Amino acid sequence: PHHASHMASDAQPDFVLLGPTGFLGSAMLRSLEAAGCTVVASRLRLKDRLGLEQLLDERRPKLGVICAAGERGRPNIAWCNDHPVETVDANITGQLSVAAACHERGLHVILLGTGAFYAAD
Image 1 (cartoon, helix red, strand yellow):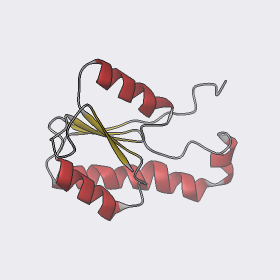
Image 2 (tube, one colour):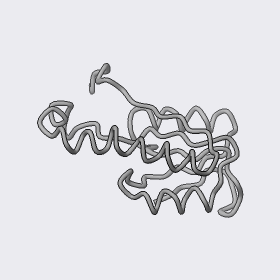
Image 3 (cartoon, helix red, strand yellow):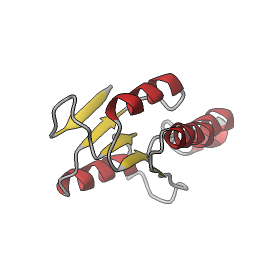
Image 4 (cartoon, one colour):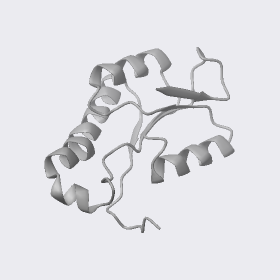
């Protein structure tokens, strides 16, 4: 589930972006592409540590990894309140896993998230 924008499939991208379809991730993807950056956008689940490590080893982004992936709640933020284990697993444990995988590879990482400060409408 990886999409490479404006680049050959074996080229080294500027960034790997995790969570490109969410509120922050989609805005980040548009911004990076508008700036002329090459981006591998991945919908990889944060629980998939081996898949993440494989992606980072294969693509080796030049500038770093941006993680905008996490649990936003389905259908709304109240879901997160009712499912604290799943929420913590994605939004804390998953992001720490991304940070650790990047650290092991000497890759710069940016972790993005929200505190439910925007309205869904």
